[in-house]
Length: 391
Ligand SMILES: *Cc1c(COP(=O)(O)O)cnc(C)c1O
Image 1 (cartoon, helix red, strand yellow):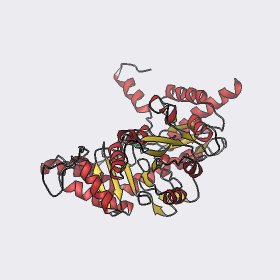
Image 2 (cartoon, rainbow, N blue to C red):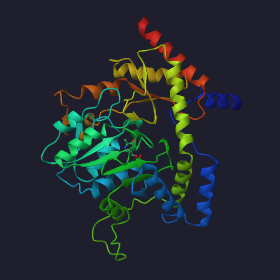
Image 3 (cartoon, helix red, strand yellow):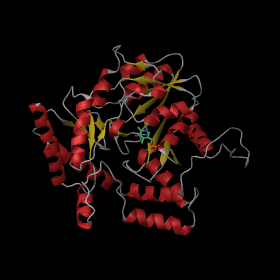
Image 4 (cartoon, helix red, strand yellow):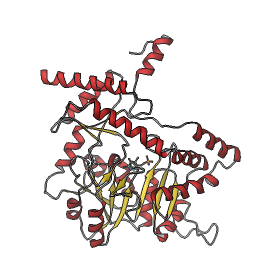
């Protein structure tokens, strides 16, 4: 309840814990002001180039191309890879809508595949089952900061001559068998939306080691202008540019990356510790071959938890001023994708992804979150569990 008396209002506001908020501070402010005062507020300027160079270094790739958001980055990567109408692109059913939307933006068709247990990334066996003569590419999503099983996905892709794009929008700085994600596929994309690990407000990046892809992405990003002939456009392009102001914020975020990651890890450690006695609930499960990054606090409710129950818990938490969000819904259940193929090596209707989607919940991950806040969240969750056993 919000009371319209100044004091109470402030108290109520302070109590509310959102799921996420950007961690931006003095360095971001300094770089942003520098960019602003230089007059280079549009999409040319020193910070754009610097952000691209530093981001490529961060991923261990030869090239990085800054763009206006992660969805545009995906669209450009697919265009650069030659994806067009009639092609099929394999994507996980359990991911954010942008992964499949970008495929549609190219006129191509997404084919949805099953998840791996616990981590939810695309299941290589299902990927192999999903390959048809029309398949041209695989988008490997590093879901909630956990890397997909890239070696197996790449092996299948090489065998069938398919393009591999990493959707690393949620996984800045994660590693797969010691190698930075973003450097493993043919291209990778990142998002810098406000709730991502590195943010520029809105923003995105395509990274690659291959000069042809780099050239194609740059070409389509900026109106498909012929690099050798100004104002000559041999194809229809896009305006997917990032501004120098956004890049300035991005440079500051990259400089502070270790800090951004370490508090996130600390928060997940608080959750794990607070919930150590409730063994049915797992937090951010991971494989031993992965160094995941906690984009979100991934709380998996007891196996078999129905979606309806999970949603009731979210209501319960909301009443206690604790924000939460459900795991992604399966994209193939949504109207635009209802007629798309869904492939599961076991011949079922994506039971693993479906169960994960129903029992997964994201809890607050904020720099200002204290151990006490996490204790409070634990108590709320425990109260709900107790209520369940009484019913
Ligand atoms: C956030 C996100 C995107 C797209 O990012 P925008 O910057 O919001 O366009 C793409 N894929 C995944 C998996 C994401 O989480």
